[in-house]
Amino acid sequence: MRIRLVAIVVLLASLLSGCGYNAFQAGDEAVKSAWSEVLNQYQRRADLVPNLVRTVQGYASHEKEVFTQVTQARAQVGAIQATAELANDPAALARFQQAQAGLSSALSRLLVVAENYPQLKADAAFRDLQAQLEGTENRITVARNRYIKSVESYNVSVRTFPNNLTAMVFGYAVKPNFTVDDEKAISTAPKVDFSAPAGGGTSAPAAAY
Image (cartoon, rainbow, N blue to C red):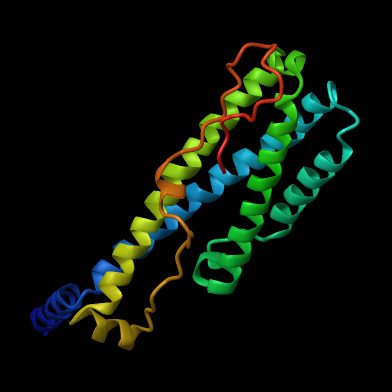
């Protein structure tokens, strides 16, 4: 009896493995891990914002509109509950992406303001924040790309035969993914470069978000 039970268990395990069940488990874990890294890097950027704003304010206190825009954009990002479940909700993921894009746009305007103040560009604290921001933007780009590829791989498993039959039985569905108007926006990390001479005037910084 025990041998028969073991044989049935082994048979069921082999059937589940052959029909993609194990692939779904592995793929789902890979997506969760990639999503967690996306959140970590976006949070890292959000944590840089207060210090960046304070540093710029020290040299350009009258640029109140830009500071307000950055602060509001960061608040909108913080208002979204960025949980693992969020990544499975297309509407919630779209709101998350829109909020992050809003913060990117606000930071871009802040950096344009900073370019107009040579003394600020020479400030050691600002230059350190600049380097941290550039590094974070690079990590965001890498994390997003890894997440996109993980979701694509998972979705292929869900939609292809015979795995799709297992997906229907166990309720696995395709996951939403990041959308971009231009694929180059996520394949090329933005550069934040204030290395021009201090007297360079008001030329726009090489920052792309």
